[in-house]
Structures are given as structure tokens and as C-alpha cells.
Length: 380
Ligand code: MG
Image (tube, rainbow, N blue to C red; front, side, top):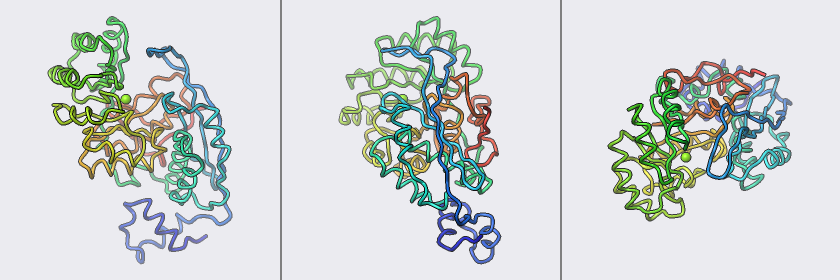
């Protein structure tokens, strides 16, 4: 089967690193192996799945022991690409809304999984929201195209796995003795810890952690601080405690105070709740020092990649985060991690019934493997 010039340019655009190859001399053998098969169709399937957490997760409003996700797959020419939607409560998605969205998807007009612009443009047009459902298609397509090319996505993007950052591990809000215990446990395996702040015992939590370890910390305030001067005083105090950045210190609806805080802060400030998708990057520029990119917020790997490139062009810091999810979505995010300053990719470590084997954390570092696509193998 042949691939025409237009298809080849699309594939070359996707692969970036390969686009430098001289098309006359080197493309011919490449075209053969990349060729799309006329008449082949992509087949989407999906199933809801409940993740069982290793520890009950407590937030102010409730405790939970499970997290709902939807697992997707796209089959093409005997090759299967895997994807996943996980449902952060604040994005308003559920297994019902995701399966309803996925039921509307019709991939039959597309003959070639490398038509990512066309396919994902169509997926985005189905509904304004549903970014987790969109991400589940995007991830499956990247896994599929990587498998067809027989290369991991990070290599296709020309990235090097030596450049992956350490990942943080999150210590939740808890009683001091539990915090101490969890810190001791995590301190052996991680080079950086993430601490949830934003209540009235922030200093006590930090002091508790500092009583057992001096490894670097980052803090996530989840919009919890209300006064900008108090926030600035707190950041100066945290800097003395070897905290390296502060995530979402104040309400996302208050960009003026937030811009003032960033301007005066001795530590980088990172936007999380304040941004979701590509157009938001420009909006938070000069309001925060950096952005926390998550596949479930932005609709997948393709848009996440664009957000990171734009943030870099604007001289912003970048971190990549995740939800509680299987090694599928976490491994997909990890493919982009060589482009970031910090990673918070611990979501798959919190669950008992992972469906895939994928990215590993070795000595605290996000460690990519050489499997094609997003680098996962199905376990069950
Ligand atoms: Mg956050």
C-alpha cells in the first residue's frame, strides 16, 4: 500500500525528528513502513473501571476508597492503542458523561490514525467540555501511532529520557503523627515531596515534615490563601524551609492579587486550577511564574505539548501533573516530562488494581522505557 506526499508530510510533521530526513533519498523505505492501509478503519471501544486506592483519601468534604475511570482502546490494522479518562471532581465529569461522549464519537470518516489534527479537531468539536473523555481518545491515538512507527512517543518528539525530572510524592493533610510516618516512608523513595497546605495549620505541617527530613518540598495551596500580604510572608517563611515552588496559592478568580504576589515572591508560583487549555497559557502569563499541565484538563498529549512549547516561549516554568489514574494516563504524561521542570506523576502509585505496566519511578526519577507508543503493557 502506498502513502501519498500529503500523508507523508503529515506524518513527518507529527514525527518532527524525522521531518529533517531528505524526502528524495531517504523517504522511500520510510514511506513503505508508514503507509496507511486503504480501507482499514479505526475501531473505538471503552469500558468504565473503578480504581481501588491503597489508602482511603480524605479531603475536607469526604473520604473515598475508589476512583472511577474509563479505559479506551482504538484498534487499527490489528494494532491496539490504549487510552484513559480519569475524572477529577472539579472538572465535572463522571463515567456516565465520559461514556455518553464516547458513544457519540464516529471515527469511520477517518482512514488514517496519523490524521491527528483532523481527528482531534473533530473530537474537540463534539462538545465544549469533556476534556477527560477527549484525552482518552488523544492518548489512544498517540499510543497507536507510536506503535505503528514502532517508537516511543518521547523519541518521536525528539526528546531524551535522560532529561526526565524527579517526581514529587504528595503528602496529604493529616494528623501530625500520620504525616511524620508518611514522610519517613516516602523520603526513602522520592527526592521531592509535595505538601498540601491552605488550612490554618500550614506552619505546623511543614515543621512536622522538617522534623524528619530536609529533602526539598513543593507546596500546593489549592487556592487556600486569601490575603496577598499574608501569602507573601508565608512564602518567605517557606523559602527558609527549603520549599522550591508554590502551586495555586490564591483564588483563580483574583488575577490582580496573584500577579502582585508573583512579582514579589522569592519562589516561583505555579497555576493549576487557574488554567486548563492552550488559550489559558497566555492569560496566566505574568500572573504566575509557571503552569501545571495535566492531560485530563487540556484534552490530551497533543494540546499538552503545545501548552508546554508556548509556556517555554513565554519564559514560564512548566510542571506536568496527573490525577489518580492507571499507568496508562500517567505513562502518557511521562512521555512529555523531559520538557518540564518538575513532575507530579504519582497517581498510579496510589492504586491497588492497575491495569497496565508502564513508566517507573526509580530513585525518585520518572524513568521511561523503550516500548513503542506511550510505553505500556496490559496486565489484565
Ligand atoms: Mg494542584
